[in-house]
Length: 149
View 1: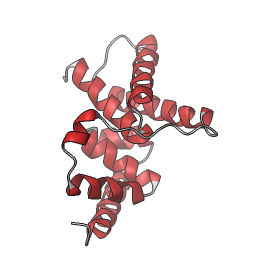
View 2 (view 1 turned 180 degrees about the horizontal axis):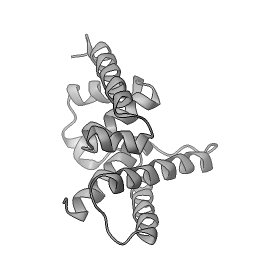
View 3 (view 1 turned 120 degrees about the vertical axis):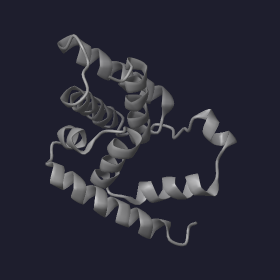
View 4 (view 1 turned 90 degrees about the vertical axis):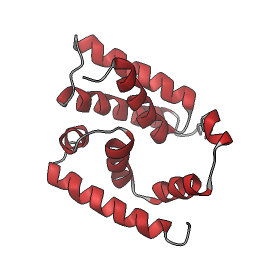
């Protein structure tokens, strides 16, 4: 099983990519773990991870609902400023062009490192739907990246 700190980092990255604010992502990550552990004594890989991602997703949505009128400032970690490359900017821009569902599928699979089964559980869809979303999202990413690199 992954160490708790590794799982925490994955949930934080997921929240950061959805919220784009490090302080808010940290708060949401902590709240997700608190909610999870208030109902569960341990964290196992598989369905428990999918449940934790679902909690984090719902908290991110709640945050945006609360802050509808007030924009969260867009912020990037300090290490990104030192190492921004054209490729990173192009990939980030291509990701932002994806629709919400496709972007979430890629974030869960490639940034969160979830398996297809875990991604399906976190998104509430079938494994086959995850495969279709992933394929469509990657095709759209390729299209968005053409000419940018």
